[in-house]
Amino acid sequence: MAEPEAPLTVFYDGACPVCSREVALYRDRIGAAGLDWVDVSRAAPAGLDQAAALARIHARLPDGRLVSGAAAFAAIWQRVPGFRWLGRLAAWAPVAPLAELGYRGFLRLRRLWR
Image 1 (tube, rainbow, N blue to C red):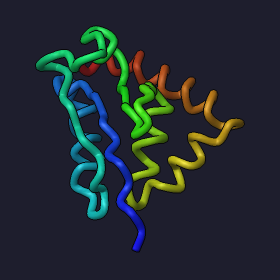
Image 2: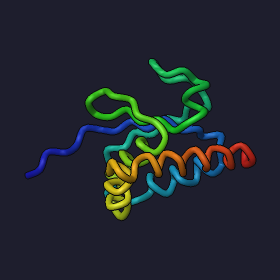
Image 3: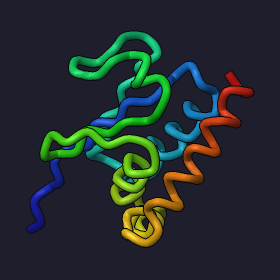
Image 4: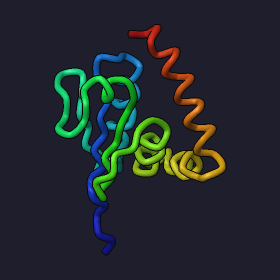
């Protein structure tokens, strides 16, 4: 029997309507256990500046490393059924810089929705 993966802790801005909807999409997926969701709009998590946490999505990997932006989404997607292929693609070295560029473009648009 396969051992369950250690949890991935995701720090997201719950005050952002787009962010909240996307988190709900992943949270409601069957088989998406192992993702701990932390809304940083209410309080800063230990070890992470609240302004930085609100500016970009962050994820603490099971080994303790903190990743953000497209790398955080790649880690999330690799845990969510139906999105795993996208997570592997976004984490692939030739694609990762393009994924980060796309995420930064989203951040510019996100300001309009807040």
